[in-house]
Image (tube, rainbow, N blue to C red):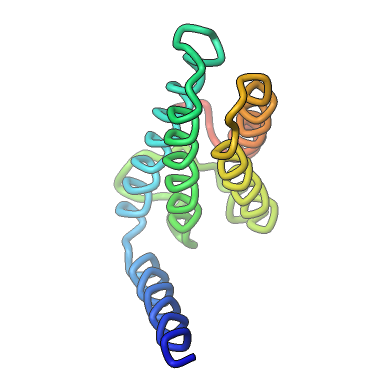
Length: 151
């Protein structure tokens, strides 16, 4: 019981530190960091796309690994859209609609993360196209609503 309480307190402390550090970030730092996270998503999607296009053979370990990376990058990116980070000294493709419609933006980001988590469990080639399509569709819906065409 004591160990469980310590773990809960430790996890809460880590979450608080992450929130504080994200809040302390300048707009430019948030923009630059979220670009890096989204580039990580793109890289994982490119590897999975190669499998979907049959340029690479289906490999459940490659699918799982890339889906894990995508989920991690999406989880981090979701934290990098604090108020005021719509502009900075770095270019951003984020539309102002993110902050005007934050609830929907957060919902779509969570759906994309969940789709990446679900993709991690795909072990059969027959299940891969549907799971990848679900992830791709959630990403596309977010881009259509909240990303400018500049990047």
